[in-house]
Length: 285
Image (tube, rainbow, N blue to C red; front, side):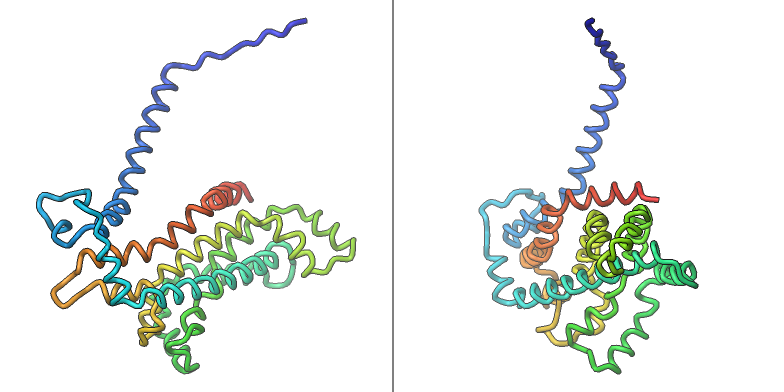
């Protein structure tokens, strides 16, 4: 007995809607990407080409003198190491503390659980500027000025990370944890063997966002760092982008390109994990 395959005809309006949607998304992508393309092309221009009128979008010849100037006059290598080192440490500790706290708040019942979680969430209400002076006084009295510990100390725990991972872990069936306990697994073993593998998408989201936020942090390193060899990339960019006669356009664009390169590399390589984590986290209760 043959089966009749009935194909549903799509309404012509649906095709028109998709075309309009893709055109709008394409235009939006161009608007967002254009500043980065302009930055990259400008880093390959001379100062005269950048400031020429009318504006030229493409360099007459690929001028690498701006990058040579940056590496000769700016300690960009040391600043790169400082930013990647501090951002990497902060990301590691945030992932550990956030996942552990999220597991505790989501699957462990103890007195004051909800009150303590509310207290953690309340930390999101206060911007860094409010606690900047108290943090500086604490770090100064601990004699951590111009040190890596002084830079990363205020960022080791993230209220946003705790909240996101707690919501994700809350959706994990409790039966899995109970089955692991029946098999004799301790809380630490459950954390590493059950919880962590199941929350990898959310961990990817928190890790990428934490790395980007820490990498781009300007205010706190500006307060706690005085020595040039301890400066991070945003500080180096802010200090050396300005010359006595004003902004050196070519060198500034080259420095900005080098500063943003690690961020773009991280996003390109981990984009699929980020999108998957955001979508899956949104489905958790």
